[in-house]
Image (cartoon, rainbow, N blue to C red; front, side, top):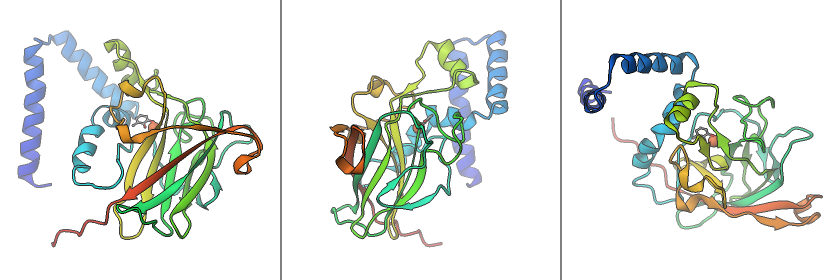
Length: 264
Ligand code: MBD
Ligand code: FE
């Protein structure tokens, strides 16, 4: 970043904070409490959580302005690269006794005109049925409920997983404390995370939200878009090669062509 860019953005940020302190006549006690809270966010390792919950959606919306493909949304703090590489049809890695309803998620990865993209990759991660992510707030070992699934020659994929639960920002840390002390709820609607990749196309980072979730219209991370609501249908035992009654859902991801890098 150039000195000029840093000076411009940092100036406005500092001025906005100062205008807030002035407008609300913030006292020394409050200033010291704010300082202690900011230090706590760092010590608890919650800067990624805080930033992705409260600010990433603005940057994401700006980055998405010129996209024509399917809706993108924020990545959030819980992506891990290098999860297991599987081929469709696949099952996400899960515990022997993984709780929750079985979900068969199927669909296609296509270009903006709907032509399937051969060998595209669906990199997905999600919370379990108790609302916890492996590697972060769950006891489940990494890579529970995480995988990179290569689609077939027409871009089609089918993944067996479980229906995720709504996600509550951890109560024990400073981000949860801010939400509580401000009287705000701490919930995200239940969602699946995706990073979709294909050679020659812009990667698509997005999420799909389980239709009917009680937090759909008040996501604490402000990251729901109407095109990202995923209806679930009921399927019986024996369908899709699953021996229990389960849910099924479908989606088509559409990728934008890779942007030509600006000449150096
Ligand atoms: C999540 O699971 C998430 O997706 C985001 C954006 C923020 C906090 C937790
Ligand atoms: Fe999430």
